[in-house]
Image (tube, rainbow, N blue to C red):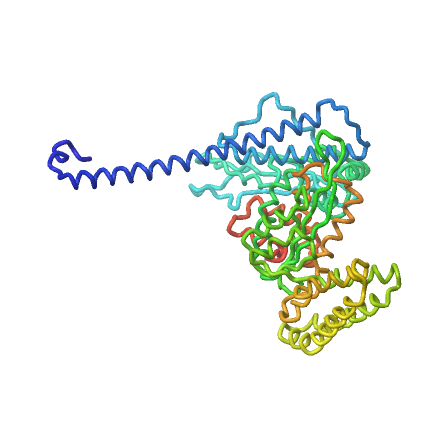
Length: 518
């Protein structure tokens, strides 16, 4: 601090410099205050948003409403609401800065698991039964908690027995810690949760069907409970999907495609068309993975938001939603399978000779590609230059000639225009051995979505759609890497609660190793 005497001795220039220094310090402190206030406003807004969503979902679930939908559709909607409520509660718990309090005394107690189910004891004891003072510990009791496990067709109960050990000399109590679980204080084991997730998102079984299957196995688990488990697991698994997305966006070549799914419009009793976007590394990239991204529309802004600052080669169809990306530094790679489909449909419909000739040319390009598929990048490029490029040049010359002969607006003219207009993108693969000839690799990853559509009919909410996309990303990526999705999910759900954030990548499908093999 500077006292009044020092101020009186300062010159005018010194006073101005001191004033400037003080103003700079005040501005810096004000910036810190502004950032803190902005962070608090964001947290308050997020809490308000989640609280509002929970209120809307509860009102939709419990309040009377006039719209009527079918019984099976109602079951699917209830599943989504229960899962959404559980997910929002977990997110609120994470955002809350208030310390956790003990359960209220009047909170209903969970019914004990049926006594007739087989029990398997899992013992947790201290690593050493010698006290710090040197005396031998004495076992004085135990705490037992029960978790519900499931193998196809049979329930079992895991009894976690935690012995209590006490030192007779210093009266120190020693006990193994409570094992961490994805659902804290819940009854399901990681195996049961994995079974529910794989059944719903991998085997396409809605929760109301699983409820019936479990009832035949001896314990009817309400679909509301199953929905809460699914919602909680969806939140817990999201960091893995985010990490997988980061890995995918590091690759230079990506595939992209989208497929429609129905999403329920809250309060209207009917659905509207949403979309599940699919992104995966190029067919020749070493990473085998896929990430699904749920969006409420087909607008190109969703693709731009997902790819963000990524700039590379994007293999896709001629959908207009990708066009702006190509003006921002992304390189378009066309899909020859889509171009071929135009001629195939025309040939089936009218037996067009021009379409048949086009199919013959394209077939020759695919013959070369089948031979190049298993070659190294250098040999693949050499083979394409030697064999595929002359065919492509002949095809292009033939298309230009045929286009000059056919009538404007005819079906064959439209098929020819589709290829000629995108010729540079369709033949870009010839000069880059890391680029595929078509987008079929990505389309193959969409097939599980098509199968699911016939079973779960629609997504009950945007949250349900995003949760479906996240879990299916992990399941499908596990399959691409040759893993059993049940074994994979069971293991990562077991390890996730205690896995350090710095080692989260170890749980990604392409890096995962079963715990026993580590």
